[in-house]
Length: 470
Figure: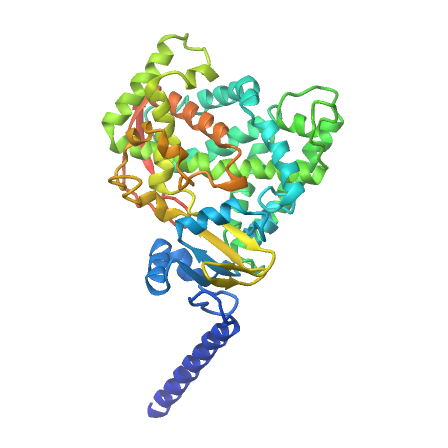
C-alpha cells in the first residue's frame, strides 16, 4: 500500500512537472520583445477552453491583469485582444493597412474559400457587390418581401394551443425563410436533407480546427461536403431546365447584362452558404430574444401589438405585409429597433470581429507579429452606462434618439468596410415574423429555462412557451 502511494505521488509530480514545462515552453515561444502582455495557455489549445467557458469573465479578468490590449491563444491562433474602443474603431476602419479578415481557421474551412468573410481587396468587393445586388432595398421590396410574407404567414399558422420550443422554431424559421428566397421552387424538396447538415455546419464554425472523429470540426466538414453535393445538383438541374425563376439562385446564375457580377459555380455555392449562415444566427437568435424580452415587458408588447393590429385592420385577412407597412409609424420605427438594436445590444448576439495582420505592425505601443489574429471585442460597449443609461434594462425608447445610431461606437452591425450587408433584409424577416406572431397569439413561458450568452446566445435546454390564440 505504501509503495502504491509513493508511485502515485511520483506520477502526480511527473505530470505536474510536464504540464508546467509545457506551459512555460508555450509562454517562451510567444515572448518576443514588444508583444502585448498576457498569457498563451497550452500548446495548440491555448486558452480556448477558458475563453469559451468563461466568456466575458475571462475577458474582464485578463483586462484587469494586463490592460485593454493583451495577448492570448484562442481558437487555434495567437491573438491580440483589443477591448479599447478607440483602437477598435481604428482597426475596423483601416482594413487595407496591414489588416484583412481573420476569422478562425475552422470557419474558413467550413464556409469556403470564397466566403465573403474570407476574401479581401478586389475579390471582397466583387463578392460583396454580388451579395448587395441580391438584397438591395428594391429587391427586398419587389421580390423578397412577398416570399418572406408567404413563408412567415404559413410557418406560424398552426401554433395555437401548443407548447413549442421557440428557440428551435426560430432556428427553423431563419433557415427555411432564407432557403425559400434562394431557391423558391425547390426549397421544400431539399430542406429535409439540407437543414440538419446546415445546423452541424454552424456548430463546426466555432470550434478548434482539429480533424478528429466526434469533434464539431469534423462534423462541420462532413456537413459541408453533403451541402456542396445538394447545391451542385440544384445548380445542375436549373441549367437543364427551361423554366424561368425569380429568386436569388436565378440571379446568381444569370449571364445576361443585368447581372454585373459573374460568379463561378464555386463562388455561387459559397455565396449561398454565406447568405444562409450570416442571416441564420442573427435572425433566429434576435427573434427568440425579442419574444423573450417582449414577454417580460408587457407594456412594450402591447404598444407593439397595437401598431401591428392597426396595420391588419387596413387589410383583408389574406393581404400580405408590404414594404410601406414596415416604415411609416412612429413606434414601428422604434419597434424595429427593439427587434434589432435593443435586442441585439442587450443580448449581445455579436461579441466582436476578427482581423489578421498581413505584416508586423504596432498598435497601442505594442508589436503584433505578421499572421496573428486581432480580436476586436465590442461586447462591453453595449453595457457602457455613459452611452446607454441603465444599460441592463430593455428600453427600446432609448433608440428614439437617432444620434445613438450615428455614434462611432455603434458597432452592433460591425464597422468599417465590413458592416453587415444583410441588415435591412434581417429587419424585414424579423419584423414580418413578429407581425404574424403577436397579432395571432399570446404566450407564456414554461420551465424557466436557463439562457447562455457566450459564445452564442442560446437556451441549452430550449426555451419553451405555451401559445394560445389572441
